[in-house]
Length: 481
Image (cartoon, rainbow, N blue to C red; front, side):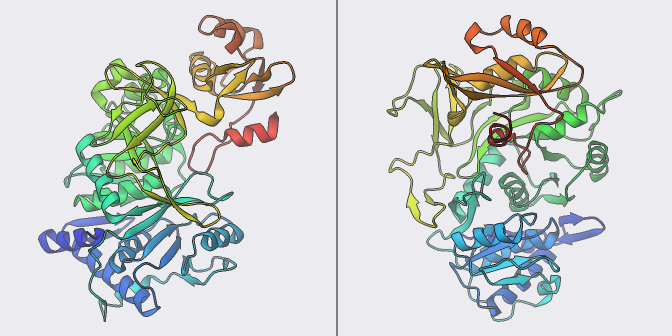
């Protein structure tokens, strides 16, 4: 299949329906198909062919989203590049993934080491011209889905058209998206979630409203309420900012579904979000390499707010030991999953392509336990486990206890090198009110074994975050331990 063919079908069946809204601009599905064809024809004239890799280092606007499908129409491979990166970072990524062309915003600095082309929105008016037939056979590669930390060591998964479509189906079935929705895109298209949700809603025949970041909390409230969106996606950091704005009534009364992903929310935070922001919360646990892993739907939060939900549609999830043997129910082990949307081939930081294991299992690097109900409890990243005197300690457990204190806004727990124990527990904390180490220790003693109680507390104004909004524990370790 070819994902662009879905938009061609929408243009034929309901071409007058609005596909994309951006500020005062409305683009129908027929116009979207025509722009898609025009951009594809321009790139074809520039020598882009099926299988060629093309980087997009662009801001959030309709042409950026259109180019996703224009490249698909040609059978070319999309390489997402963050437009906020330095020219050197962009050039490094383009080199590792052997891109034939890097498309940048007009006025941006040229990235070294690769052919660079400044975007001109007039491409959309080129017309279909002499475009070849749309590649629809042999399940070609659609994109290289970059993993976290790409600016340091680029690596990514080769996602085919069919694998991406299977991810869309999983979202539609598990979370109930459909053609009547209005999805508000508030996160960069460079990120896997921003890109995947926008494309999934277009493929469903819904309307996608683009509102580029960054947004202050009050701007988010205004943008969501004025957009008449039925669905939007936010990361936990944004939701915490909204809770602080609350006065009376729901902040976002019009939303039917409020998707959250990217990091953990704690049960007490979830209660506040559902009471003050919107009750239609849906938790989505996913990876850039394999798409959706599990979903915690709205009706499950009362009983399973401490979990990441149950396996997404047609996704098989296991928790295994270091020899890949399934562990007992409730025991902690390495999480792995497989399904029709999981990439089967990857490119490492040297540009070398390799396959995952023969059975199709992908290991996202998370530790987890599985309940009898099938719900998944995340214990933290495998690499973040603290080994204190030969005993494994899971930071997520300690973080969950610390944020139960009203004074603690955020907490991040890491292992600090120790001559005596190998590692000791250090907690980095942001607070709304002054709180003493003694008060923190007494609180932890009520919920944790003595060896899990932090040996040191470090108070910060803010915790370092990656551009995706995820906590950057690597930066914490580098700066403070």
